Amino acid sequence: MKNSGSGHTLLRAYFSFTDVLEKIIEWLSAVAFFIILVSTLLQVFFRYVLNAPLLWPEEAARYLGIFMVLIVTSNALKRNAHIGVDILSSKLPAFFQKPLKVFAYMVSTGVMGFMGIHALDLTQRNFFIPTPALRIPIGIPYTAMTVAFFVAAFTALCMTIETVFNIKQDKVAAKETDVEEAK
Image (tube, rainbow, N blue to C red; front, top):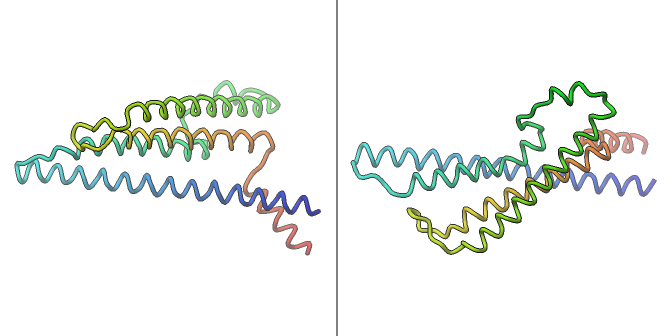
């Protein structure tokens, strides 16, 4: 019985961590979107009202837009919200659907990990090259790209494990409730 309790504690910690990670990503993407909005409005104001366009808002919006899209990739993966063609897989017997899903998550883990490794290499080689308008090291936007790919790889790996072992957050909570009621 003690192993079951410690297993539930470990699963609870795992789901707490992934939930916090998901909330951080949502918060970061909201902040990035807000900065894009403000910088774009500033650019419009300076260009059309003051007739003195700023140099940096377009570049800032581009880097933040890319960051925002890449960082929410892991949340979309966790929610199974990516565009997919399931016309063939949905026609397969249930016996084949789970292995196919595991395979897809494993491929996603490999691709995102591969992209993360190469993004890290790119970041290290070019870190101190200044960006044209912002004059910040290009390594800062590249670091965001690297982090986003590794977080997506981690999420894909978690989804693989959850699928293989049929672990669902609501099932863990239900089992904990059953254990509490039994006491």
